[in-house]
Image (cartoon, rainbow, N blue to C red):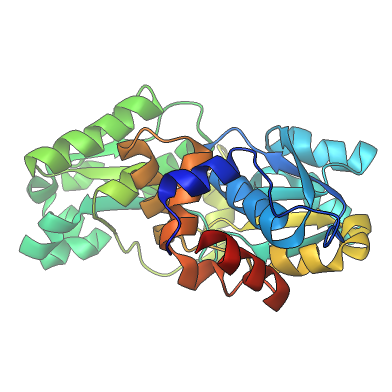
Length: 323
């Protein structure tokens, strides 16, 4: 890639020099801009590719999960909704069954991950910490404490039930319930920077897990019946199970898929692994960058990945633009 970071930044900031009447076959597109970093980055990358590769006029719509899907149900807009976590919006499944929306792709290809983690440096020294049995047999190796999610987080119900299922009390594992996501992230950062032991809940993709190498503790096999129980506060007899990965998708309205089939095809290909997204978010945080700047970083450094998402015509236009 020959074009400088700043030159591409100027383009993605609003100079759509590729959009001209010569190839403005794509019309207007509305796309969600959720209120968290990974979705905002996906939206910025998608917007750049649509504008510069396909000649679209793209409007971003600031929103969040439930309002975006409710808006589709009531108004048919926005055309595209990025990074929907399906476990938190049952209305989306209803709209899909009604034929109003289509799932284009799993935007996080290996799913959003809730997990219990220990640092890579601990596993390198004590391989037995890869599994929950190894952790509970050696609580002193992880500091004798589990750093739990804050009150009010949905995952707290599952964590609290699993703590009972794995019988932390009899293994001498203390539970510390954090007061906020900020203190939870700070605990991970502090332990990693000091190379101290920690055993902690966190989720991916996030900048924290992009910055600090952590290993997801193997909780054993996934049991659908046991998992259904631990999701409830009223689970009377919690049983051991792995935590279920979240399905995270990009959805488009059926009307839009029919109106703009080439853009629908593009959105079917835009996807990141959890690790890839975490690495991008870590770069964004370390550089105090906006979502647009993080998208520029991705566009200018990972052409091999995104060039496979676009059609031949768009690829030719972007190659000419960026070189």
